[in-house]
Length: 236
Ligand code: OAD
Image (cartoon, rainbow, N blue to C red; front, side, top):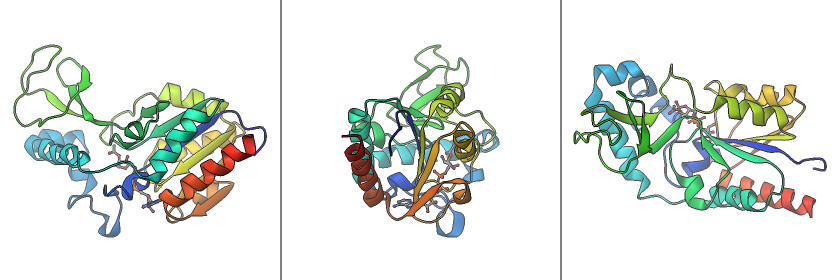
């Protein structure tokens, strides 16, 4: 693992599965009893606003009942100890990476603990229910707050920053993601194009497994601490 300075790590729902948060494409393809398309689209929000707001209210409340697991903790340790550039790009909307202590982190699909005002575009930390008609703290409009989640058909956050990090990466790691959703699913090919080594850690081969130099199959809570230990030991 010599010659590695700059690292980009992509995480998905599999990294939070052992904390007790459901993945999206589990058995039956249902997410907490719903088809992803019936919840995660601007059309679903326009069609049935209360259902979508209630769904995310429940997900936000569920966050209070779960804790980071060994995978989040190992990535936070790496973030703290790695002397080179490092960026954790998470597709997850939970806050378990930051609760474990990670700071070099961005949420490309938004955050459960944040609201987005449809009237003025303000994003702000948000902890309660969105069904109670809270006014936007920036523009004062009523009934305009929605979950700050990137729905299908919307542009993920911070793509420029991600592209820059991928172009500089010596190592790209993907953890606990099915590789079914773009643009995240394409990061492995971008990173390879720019010369990075690529490694996947997942319970089973993702849709893009073929594109990685190496794939390790198993639970994130075991594979991630093991890998972080190897990387930090090789640096010493
Ligand atoms: P998925 O549910 O599609 O994939 C989760 C992956 O994690 C699967 O490949 C599982 O095999 C793997 N997995 C499950 N448990 C694991 C464990 N304990 N250790 C390691 N791997 C495990 O979730 P994502 O790929 O994150 O977008 O989904 C991508 C996006 O689709 C989400 O961000 C979400 C959804 O639409 C938005 O909400 C905007």
